[in-house]
Length: 170
Image 1 (tube, rainbow, N blue to C red):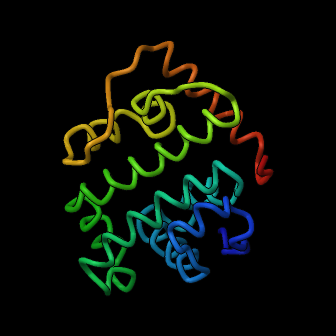
Image 2: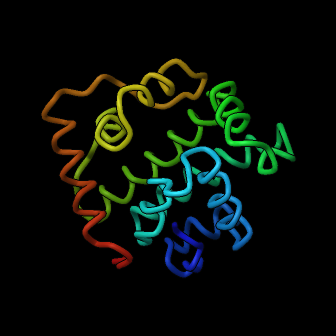
């Protein structure tokens, strides 16, 4: 089970500053993910990578959780079943988080690897078809197109490279 042993210094300082992410956010995200995904929440492992990839995962959860907490301040005191239900009943929170996360990943990939990667390809490579459709069916205005198989493969390769950087920030 992952305990928040990371510090904000493990993440992209530009994102931490822009979104005013705090140590309390780290703790709340850990609690939220354990309620939503279980004690061994896989997203916590992504966040624990730190660096760019971990920053993207953390950013997603911070954005999503802030929207959800604005709608239910006691959310983190609810049962796992109620948290899951609330998550499913508020898809626009997840859609906004997907957009913010993958726009950030797209910018990092362009800067580090000099590669233009479509948002749709990144979402399919990183999150999956369900998430792609959640964003596509939302009111979030982003340039989202159905990518080719080659674009998804290329996006997977870029994401793998980011994961392999681990906590290193270039």
